Length: 210
Image: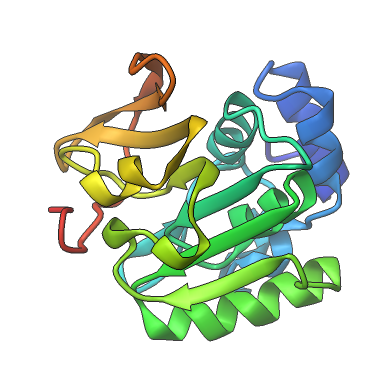
């Protein structure tokens, strides 16, 4: 990754590694990761590593963002709930894939910063609703959701999130302990869980988190 110096090359690297499909790649090309990391981290913006963004939180590695965005099978007609806005990087990519995105963040400072980051990166934020609050409770007023993506680790699936899934909806979440997790996708229609890959996420610290 040291030789990769721009966003397009980073996406080419992810494509070559099989981390995403062409639809997701197209969305990621429109969202420059450099605009979502702190100034002192910009030299590493296109490295496939997580980067600290403050408050013990990180902007996930591009390969993880790519896999999560791709494997959820997001379509333009979908309404998506994101738990854990962070710097807004994943949010912006979701906004390019889905018709409507609701994103929730517990840390107030991140909400305003993410709004600015996303607007700076993609111009319009008209299809995104930013909410500050406990993500484990979901967002009943905007439910049901076709897709729910949780970007922090939890010991179990928060009951409110599962109840807010549409009948054919899917929920992606890293489940496990504080040290390691399994990235899982729950299909509401079948009740089955698909394991994607082992991961290490920061812990979900809301009501039904750690």
